[in-house]
Figure 1 (cartoon, helix red, strand yellow):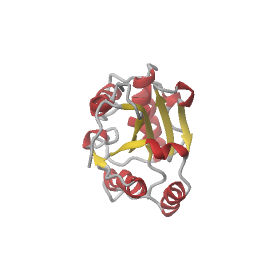
Figure 2 (figure 1 turned 180 degrees about the vertical axis):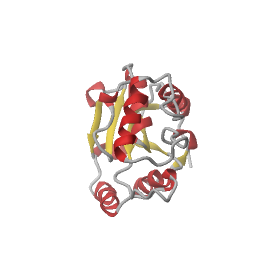
Figure 3 (figure 1 turned 90 degrees about the vertical axis):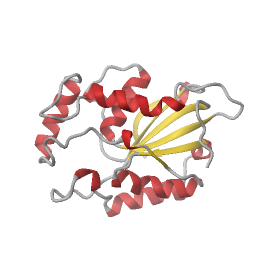
Figure 4 (figure 1 turned 45 degrees about the horizontal axis):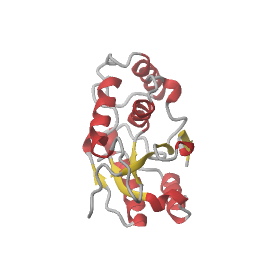
Length: 199
């Protein structure tokens, strides 16, 4: 497998779609729901035009991300590169919390990015490791056949990476509106840049 480094024009980040919420299972081991698997199948059976430009597929090691990345990689003929440092914000200090509590803590995480929300990984720390993870491919360099990196992972860290690459302050209003969205930062063609969109 060829690994392209430094010859990319764009990064697209795709967040995994809907998951099975099971408090008895560690969050990193949650799987995709049936309708989420169907969404991925529809994506690969009717791919967007930019699929032809993908040079590298990167995925988080978490189960839900791998379950999205593996069929996409097969469709592209690329073995997803598993980078554990692209995992979701570390929330192990609290473990599973009910939705309302999760939203409250997420609001705090974005509002005070330098501080921990009850032991959660601070947003600044998560953003820094995401930048470190993409450093081999970013910033891009001019090449004859520009391609891109498709990252498949999680909404929280995906939002933090978007903020970093676009020079945007960390804020909850930039967060994805739901699971299963994609954003793009394209240095060769800024007209293709867009924040989170449902795929």
